[in-house]
Length: 359
Ligand SMILES: [Fe+2]
Image (cartoon, rainbow, N blue to C red; front, side, top):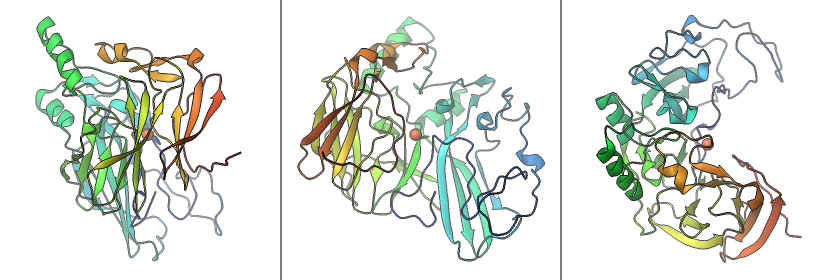
């Protein structure tokens, strides 16, 4: 979470249902009050926030996380219960899946939902809120055709016939059929541009943080190619780090991008120590001087990428015998300084706050 963020400080995804709370840790509905100097007044859950089976386009699930937004765009001032401190000025953005149905069809996986940006703007004790759908090609095509048209995280479009299936497979190799549904996160680059991301490189989309308007694709100007990258790059005022999994020659390319640039530069490469493919790198950690490249036992699977139906592990495959490693790369030289044998097998999804000690 961030207010008038510094680069990289706006976040999203992977924390479904988490409340936004800047100054006071409490749960609405009077469930718990913690770490506050004075007791907060009791709050009532608005009828608008109560989930009913009818909401969300006929979605039968009652979990709030599965409740689709009811309109493509909305903005308004929220009634505040209690007081917002006057020193709290700025904008909080988050991004994540927010629409899980097309017509009568309901998605089956949280990650398939079409991206919804949420904006909370705090100013002088007032709170202006809004949300807006990211106008990805995948979202626009689904709305227009009333069906899934791109390969999402867990689902693929249903082919009308064998020929269209073959054509869809061909477009997979070029990346044309992969989704650009940028529903995983939102980052502010060092130059001020705000970019929404997902695991496909084509799903890097620039948005206006004030209006939430989709401005266009973030086009990388280098020639590195590839179809996928880590969904959560590391972004600071001076740098942008991400990992490009190499599915052909199993490994990872570590790249860095300067503020104001669209060109990623290769810092180094990690060759996999085990398994037939690189492990899934949804996120990765960095320290002041090192990039840590996780090679986990849940690995990308080309066969599952080609399948037309969901598999138990989606685009991945579990390889416990391939073990898991943590490769540590020097940011300055690109050299591997350590490849730690981590555990017989494991998978980590999200990394936060890393410290690395050379021993
Ligand atoms: Fe995530």
